[in-house]
Length: 381
Image 1 (tube, rainbow, N blue to C red):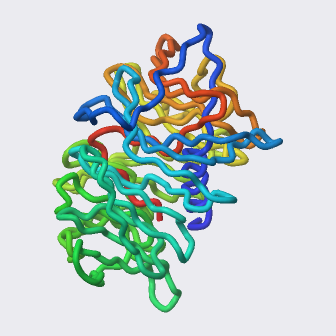
Image 2 (image 1 turned 180 degrees about the vertical axis):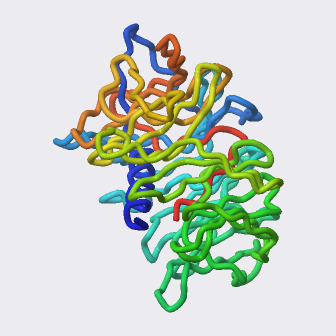
Image 3 (image 1 turned 45 degrees about the vertical axis):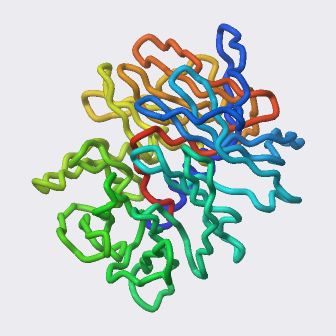
């Protein structure tokens, strides 16, 4: 079960870094190319931070990135370049976007992730100043920790349940925290709390930790659950491993109440696991996963079943990025069949099926991870 959960999470993260694709009914001109010479605007609600990759496509339609740009995207689709770098052979030096502070001022990139040469790039979004931070050995993920520090998650060794946590201050050696984890860690917007599951896949609880890893609260769950994101100021969306699949629930950290959002759909359903959910006036919509790592947009019906939402002209995966008013924010992405049309980030009304593009990239460009303003993502452990 743990392997399936990690496989589905990995599929979501890998797809989120793939080139996106769509075929809109009305042709749309690409947004102006991001500029790194202009002043950096102050982001707010409706803004996004993303990595845009540029390069040729191989025989399978996959983008082979030669250059990466960290960009701010306004609600109107205006793009401002924050940081960029050319990549070496085989993508050497490539980075991933792992965190964005709730106030929009700081971004965290990890370069050469998973390799011995991996290191963090702490980016001041307003000034474009980049601080290079050595992560040390055995680091699986890195997040912003507040006060210029980083929160690091290690790898499990098998000697004891879970994986270690460290705090790496701006000036100093990393400090081991008392808690161990078996999955993602979700910081609070003010960096004073950490939400995580238990240290063992057999544990059925959500834990609230202080910023230095001390246990503050333990909330029982019926299954092994890990955090996805903050649903509101006191409620956390969690993924739970149930019957060899992933379902979603909400956990109120104040009352301890656990509310089921989705349930196992059974062998006959195309929905093999749910990764995220967004609610608008027309209903609850899901980032659902199917065979071969295929990701699609689903809707939870009143009886708890999940149906696939038709997105006009979608070719591959449809990624659920966020929600604004009555619209979902989606991204069209390449799937396992190798389709690689134009990359587009768009607003989508699931009630009318109307899609309005926010950003349209060029033929030889694709999106990496896209983070909405104000949302702290859980770690990608």
